[in-house]
Length: 155
Length: 105
Image (cartoon, rainbow over all chains, first blue to last red; front, side, top):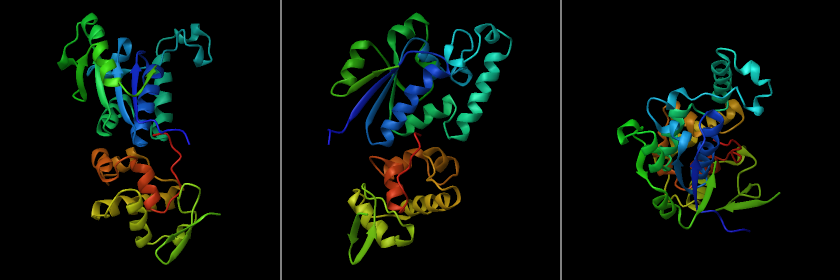
């Protein structure tokens, strides 16, 4: 049998529901398997831990080939909100929580959450703009230090 | 089918040691499985989780997710990880005599 994975550090770099969920599911799943997990939020992925944005993350209906519809339809007012609400209902049924609850769940599961310093500076954010589950704002060097000895997954 | 001995009792299990016939489950077997999983003794909070999981399994045919355990007020996520370190849902399901949980969350 192959050696068990002991530690993963997952980078969430994309915004939108489809950008944020894979990393959340994978980090939570790691903790469920007893694997040490870190989450590093960068660029638009940072929305998932910014207090005033985390509850409003939507699915992009324009320029998203995964939506299986013509982009022009995605331009219609309310389309993104409707797609988001449909998706949220389906996810709730299979027990995938909304983003703020998910962040709380992975943090309670022992996953450590970090915000990327470069992005924080670029968007002019402060520590108090983030949800309390965020451990700290760190630079890339510190991320590698934290990730040392484990696997790194970029999403 | 593989079998496993717990004291004087023999039970049917799958390749990973999960009971395949719930009717063979007893509290003594639960305690023995717990010890194998590194939990020396099952306290009242452990039993509360185990019993809730069995009830949910009976009703829905699958073990409840961490979220469901948390929302139903049985146990907080933090406490669950403390009680069953290193894989809470898998370990609790195994101790409860249920099949291995299949969900991703």
